Structures are given as structure tokens and as C-alpha cells.
Length: 136
Image 1 (cartoon, rainbow, N blue to C red):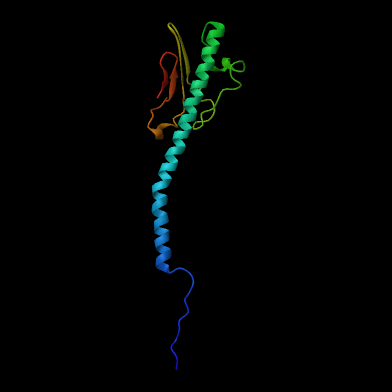
Image 2 (image 1 turned 120 degrees about the vertical axis):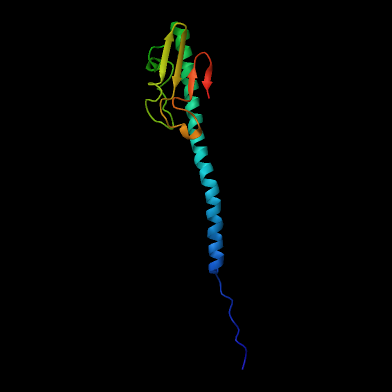
């Protein structure tokens, strides 16, 4: 009689599948925390950009009127279409964080949300001070 010839089977063995799943799991474990951190840093960058834009509008208000606005809403709609929202914290985070000092004339705008803590910032950060600029 003849020899039995075994047909070559198509597909993966169990060991090959488990190895592929293990490699994908290791890669995902490395990548996902970095993606999450990048997402929070992007929100922080958006918040800092909003602070700079509002500070520019406040300075324009000061140039036009001779004093800083007592409320942040006074820069709307002549100098800004609307007050921006913090990408991480949402609405009304900047209005609550606006302070004006009359002697000497100065102002501070800070993000009153506590949503930037994951990037290593303290509560009330980032903020923009009229005399020293953006922190951090």
C-alpha cells in the first residue's frame, strides 16, 4: 500500500494566535496611556490659547476705555464673539476665574476647573496675569 499523505492545513495554530494576542496586548498597554496623556495635554494647550485670546481682548478693552473690565463678559461682543470654554472643564470656567485689581491696575484670568490636574498642574492653573503673562 501507499503512504498516507497528509494535506497541509490552512490557518493558524493555537500557539500562533495566543502569541499574536499577547504581542497586541503588550503594544496596547504601552500606547494607550501615552494617547490619554496626549489628549489631556491637547486640552491644556487649548485652554492656554483661550487665556491668551481673552487677555488680548482685555488689553484692547483697556486701550479703548482706559480701564480693565469689571466682568469678563464686557469684552463680548465687540472684542470677542463669545467667551471661550475650556476644552477640559466646559462652560463658565473663565468668568469665575477673572479678577481685577485697581491699584495698581492689573488683572488675572485663570481656569477655575480642576481638570488639568492630570497634566501636573495645581488647582487654578493655568492662568494669565496681565503683568507677567501665561503661567505655566
